[in-house]
Length: 257
Length: 230
Image (cartoon, rainbow over all chains, first blue to last red; front, side, top):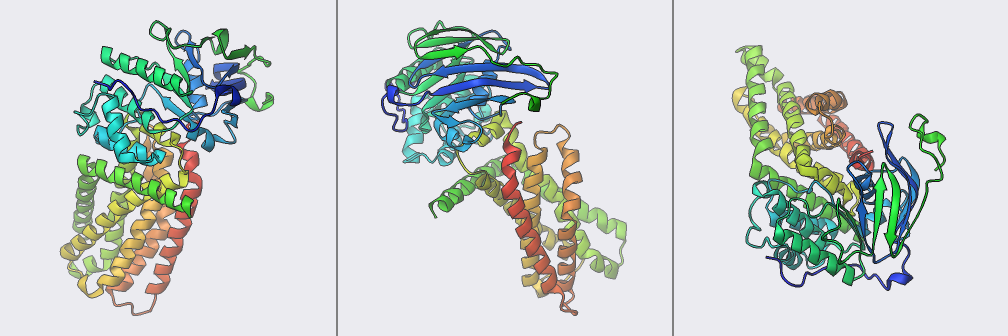
């Protein structure tokens, strides 16, 4: 069972109103095999907000999160995270972003503890040994810490992946369907994490099909449809229609960045 | 200095992770050693029972077995990264790509070194070659050869890891690039085993050193692009 107080360690963030927007995109687009998964998103999310990305399958939620995490590069358009250019300052962006994707990014032959120790080494986590133990306890896996993750259920693997996020000091957390595969305890863990991040001023973007569990912590909602922002609501969010029509038949190089 | 220390820490973490996963899975180590032994035996059968002929061919057989088995080993080390999105997660850590390359290459080097030593010993036994009399130059050759195969293999395993036909593509890409290393390692081994009558051992070892440096620098400089998924 997770502890009542989860330890999150953000970098020194400062007051939200003194920080640059956590996310600022202009005509951000990504094409796969000529087909736009994201078709020109101009969106601004203020620092410290917890925002849901909503929309049906194929709306572009995962693509937007992967772009902001620097997992993929934009076909065109611009994006800034914490004021840093996603394309030119990707290495600095990675220091500020944590991403929970559908895949857990874990090594099957390593135990939960070994996976988190490796993550701590890669993240440069101070006091790594104690932080790993704390993270294991926070995600409710202290008892199974030495078991190989190959033998874990999907929900337990997701808990380990959430533990990995706790080892970093991200100012922007990107969660792609965080409740998927989790049992009731696991869902409560995500609820607790969202509250903890909100309390310390971490910006959170949560891709989800519904907001039932998120209502209590959300500052706003962004609804995507067919790769475009269809609707926004709440505080700290601005959006604009794309300034360029996406034409997959035209080479990307012909379209202005 | 601090950056260098950080990169060393990251490289060691990657190499340690690969080593633990491999030792636990025992995939690359056992299958690679077994494959190398089979290659040596088959070459031995193909060449026949003539002891002088076998001894003359021993350096070539040694390095062909090391290179063929090495392709399996470096491929396996990168297959670890295909576990449930591990490669993408590796690319998202805020660390130098150069350090990730160094870590993967270090893990590959450890496996290749083990492979080289075991294959060298096996060649000595199977083909009645006097290894003990030239152990130092042979060891230096194995170390340099292992480093070269690991450097090239780490890079090309990174190129092919996302491909469905990676098992076919990896040797196709690696073997032509390894040709200078194969030549240098075979010649150096041959010179060491025959007492270096023409004084050429040093030159071949220098070729191996140059090859290793070029491949490590090129791999470290370009590996980061391989981690990008489009």
